Amino acid sequence: MTDWLMQANPKMYDLHAAVAASRAHNWRTPKYRKAVSVGDRAWLQVVGTNEPGLYYIASVTSVPYETPVPAKPRCSARPSCVRG
Image 1 (cartoon, rainbow, N blue to C red):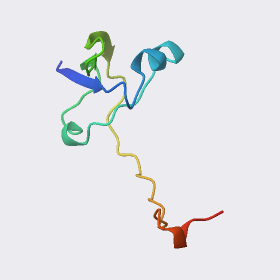
Image 2 (cartoon, one colour):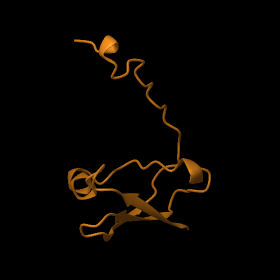
Image 3 (cartoon, rainbow, N blue to C red):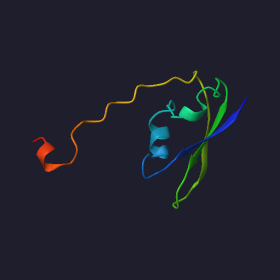
Image 4 (spheres, helix red, strand yellow):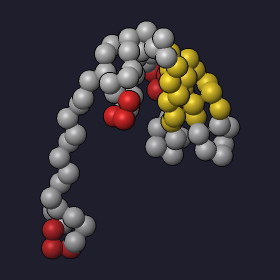
């Protein structure tokens, strides 16, 4: 069994609300995808300046998999490209 540290930046993800809503979550780990195994332990950490720390311990329950990345819209913020 391997231990993994998964970080959540509260500016981008409310870990406490997510855990309260559901105990099953997906985490991105593209760099270590091949090393993560079922049964590994994940320590869930909140980072930042407001109450950072390790808050939850989780278990990996499925083999890692790659999810498709949604295509970025071709339209930028240029005025000629704004749809209305």
